[in-house]
Length: 215
Image (cartoon, rainbow, N blue to C red):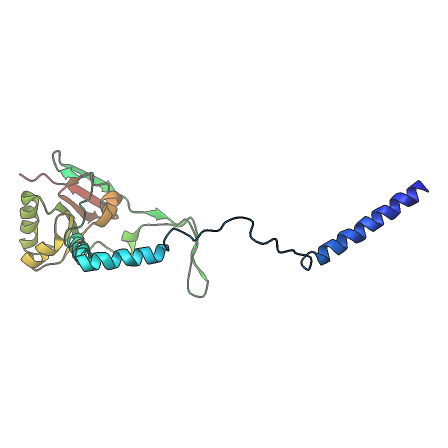
């Protein structure tokens, strides 16, 4: 009897629970306002930004900021940040670099066919030769600039000029030849260059790097 009573109570509780779930939305009660309400005091963020821009425009400050930004952009293009960590050559040195690399993944063509498997070792100089010597120099150093100019004027000289500091645009206008810039020092780090001027040339399947002393 007691077991039957407990079972009946559980059944009734289950029915009541199910009814509560279904009837809850319909039984919601509006309790009204429980306390005083206040308007939002903070201004809308977008409206605040727009108002500040209008104020700066009326005062002329916005125009000055835009002109300053354009000037900074033009200066960065004309004279990129110099490559850090380099110094003028004090102790000349010559060393060699093997450009051989190992593939870390498979190389496939447009149709997904395997061209080169991961682990393949290849020396790019077996396929493409270095047609010009690479001259890295600091355009802020008058001596290095003069040495670079001498090399470009030598008969039959094939030199690609690469700045590590200074304005490549100014040199191109003055010399009427292409001048490049090693942005972020990617090539300098790849070749292990620590002093400039430095000349990179090809000897067989190796690259020769000469850090040259300029009197």
